[in-house]
Image (cartoon, rainbow over all chains, first blue to last red; front, side):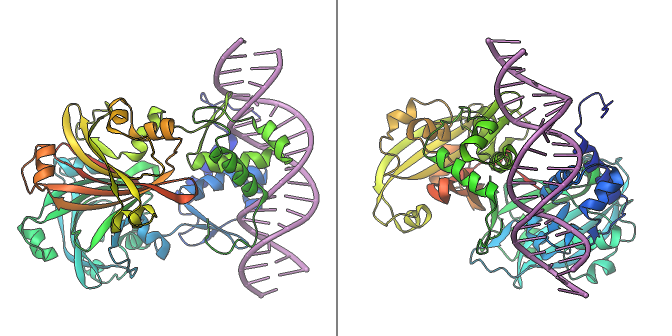
Length: 242
Length: 242
DNA sequence: CAGTGGTCTAGACCACCCG
DNA sequence: GGGTGGTCTAGACCACTGA
């Protein structure tokens, strides 16, 4: 077996790259099953064990979901289990009912310094800004300001947001074919300004969590930058350290 | 993986349990190499592949560290790479010099309601409380109050803390044979009270991160409860969402 | 060089799901 | 029953480390 790559790359990683490529090209849609390990092994002319190891890694990366006896599926944000992967806020009383996203505003603008740096686009490039409220059991808990590259989110309007009653990422995936793979959050404590205090129904100056998030799609391409202000009177940000 | 009744336990998981047991019994010390896969396979009368899969999982759990060509080692908090596994605070300017732990106080007490619940011990059981400051480049950034079960940390005194210039978990591991496996953090925003404002040199009422952590050792046994107040003027809490 | 972990293969069998 | 993923084995070879 010849590996002409300068740095050694095992076969299963090459297979992983090929599957990733097919995934990115939309060969199989989120929620659908990919071909069986045997079929993929035949397609790439490797043994089932090698395909298996490639899929193992992609399942660990939350790109695929294995279901014994059924098949391997493309991960989807429509899956309710995916919801709390990117939302680490938990009510003090442990109530697990899913939060409700209430869009407040949606307008177009040009990328400023910070947005262009975070999204990896030119300053002045078109962006879309969304303001929305997150309610847990009718109580406003998070106010978000979300910056999206206009090029990717062509048809995103307030109406589209209004007409969607599931998670934002679920909308992005279904409507724009954009799959959020991973994110990075920077968390600070700040005092509520006028706008936040009104939206979250707390006193001005109340300490809030400021959660800045950059979200990446395939190829580590940033496609969302958001800043959320979290009221932590009745909720907390939960983080598991492994 | 699943929390259902284990109707079936694959061989490699049984091997994993056996290795875990040996680890817990101190058969190999942190930082040391465990026997080779071949030796373990012979010892447990299974194939190398099965041992391999067991070790794979334990490496993923950060219990073991594989080093190609050398062997497999017991993970240790003395390893500098382990430091930022439990400390997610990063300076705004990206300076990577490790923080300095400054013990302020260390006294004995009896567990109250909250401490007993968090540590899974009887109310009134002996506990040790440590107050300490974390400095990044001479600047005070975190003030911690740490609750430890007295039974486990017999000889812990202010002197012992003073004489240690590495991380706390490194001390716990070396001195008390206690390995911290995983932790759970609950994060809220709070206003600095008098004590915190003096320790962190910020104005009273400044928003701070309140980070409550419960840390677990083998068998998911809680052995530390701490509450930290983080000043986020020049630092932020970084969280990767995968 | 010998010894370690890392990869790849081929085949057998098991657990699970569904028609 | 047939198809899927999941486990287990045995053997060959590769990449890395250190003496």
